[in-house]
Amino acid sequence: MSASYKTLRQSASDEVIINKSRFIGYACPCETEEEALAFLQSIRTKHKDATHNCYAYVIGRNAGVMRYSDDGEPGGTAGLPMMEVLKAQGVVNCCVVVTRYFGGVLLGAGGLVRAYTQGTVIALRAAQVVVMEPSQQYICEVAYPLWDKVQHAMRTLPVQLVSSEFTTAVTFTLLMREKDAEQVVNELTRITDGRFECLLEDESYQAWNAE
Image (cartoon, rainbow, N blue to C red; front, side, top):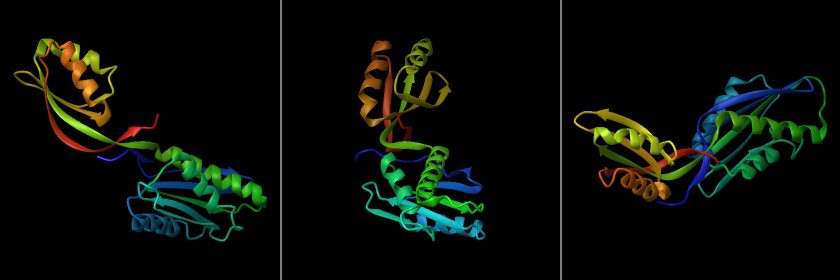
C-alpha cells in the first residue's frame, strides 16, 4: 500500500462572532471534486441569506486539485487564507466553507484574513484531522489463562481491539498500522511464549489520530 495522508474524520462545524459578524466554519471529508462541490452547494442552500459563503478544497492524496473562492469578499482576504490553513495542516480530500453574516462593522483586509483563517481553523478542529494510514486487521486467538497478559500488553502497544469472543478460547480482532504490525505480533507472541495465533484478515486505509 502507498503512503499515509491527512484528512478529516467527519463533517462538522463551529462558529465565532468577530466584531458583530458571524462566521460559521464548515468542514467535510471529500474523496472527489464532485463531493466537494455538492458539499459547497448544500451550505449555500442552507445559508442562502448569508453575506458570503467562501470556500477552499483540496482533492487527491497528492493535492492534485486545489480550488478556493472569496465569494465577493475583497480579493485575497478569504479563499486564499483558507487554502493556506489547509496547506499548513497538510490535509487533503476535504472541503471547508466559511459562511459570513455581516454584522455592520467593517473588518478591513487584515481583519478579514484573520477571521477567515480562524473560521477555517475551528472547522478543522471540529471535524478532527486524522492520518489515513495503511492498516492491517488480524484475527487472533489465545487460551483463556493468557488473555489477561494479552490485554495488559495491548494497553501500551499501538493497536486497537476491534472485537472479542469467548468460546473454547478467546478469539479477538486487532487493528494496527501496517508499520506497527511486526512489532505488535512479535510482542504478543513473546509474552504468550509462542501460544498466540493470528491470521491477516484485511488490509485497508484507516483513520488514526494525528500525533
